[in-house]
View 1 (cartoon, helix red, strand yellow):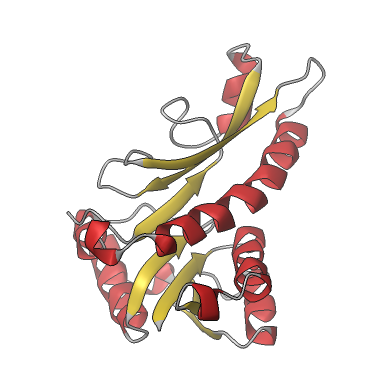
View 2 (cartoon, rainbow, N blue to C red):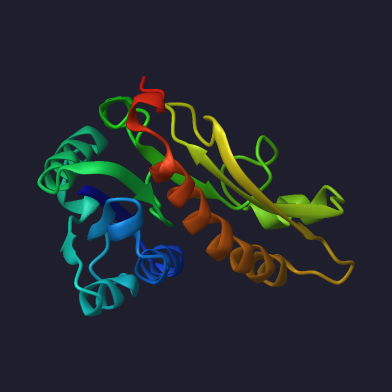
Length: 200
């Protein structure tokens, strides 16, 4: 059985979408995979109770308790590796990861970003899309590399940018599509032969 570990910092809505897809899509039987743990850097992350209710192991590592980003990532890696993950999924995990962390999980670390990459990497993506006069926005599932919001694109969803959109309204429209494409991209990754997954 291939284990999936999901990292969150807040509501965990994408995590919940993946967990529900795994349950409804019978990933354990069809893909030999299961979500086993949800980890957060915030004790107040709203997604933790959902994970517990669905039988996931949960734990919290407060990044503020560590002297450096490297120390935190080393502790996080140790906690993740207790679950022997085949795949690590970032679902609203609001931390920039160190190169050592990314290298450790190379080829098995996924993220979703709320823009049509390579456009608008980083933060404030929805306001930036509105300010740039974009007619379309969206979300991108990609493999994680040491360069922020780069890496092979696995899936994208496109939504219109309407004339009266605010950043919050556009964010909600994009998020509804994230909940569709992220589980689909994870399932597609799992459906591949492990020998075909590029590592490093």
